[in-house]
Image (cartoon, rainbow, N blue to C red):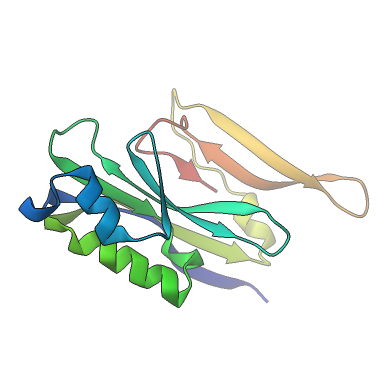
Amino acid sequence: MPTNQVSIDRITVSGELKAEYRELQRVMNALGSSWELSGGVFRLIREYPNGDTENIAYYAENAFQAGSWRLDFNPNKLTDEEKLEMKRAIDLLADVHFTRLDLAFDVFNNELGMKYRIYRPNVSQREYGVYTAQWTKAVETIYYGSNSSDQQIRQ
């Protein structure tokens, strides 16, 4: 039976650092030891029992706007403790606003979903497929637009 699911895939919030956090050392003290600092960028890293790591969040000064900072993360994967870390990072900012909000519309167990295509002239298209048990290649994901575009569509 076909099912649909809508979720938030990525959030970026931006804002000005509050006056009391204008020095990098003060930001570091406020964020705490959970965040790693490298090259002026704070990263919240999750470590798994097998030793693998995953970058959960990115917190840095906005390269395009002096004095503005941005926090980039995927809310779907956060533990309760990591959600508190996001709140702590956002609390350092004034005039907080969304600069990016990616929504995912997932359709499961519906053959028709991949038979209809989006047509946009002069837009690149890439297909990613999987091989089924019968060794036929089934399309799993289609991307429209370049990776650097603000208007990329994933089907």
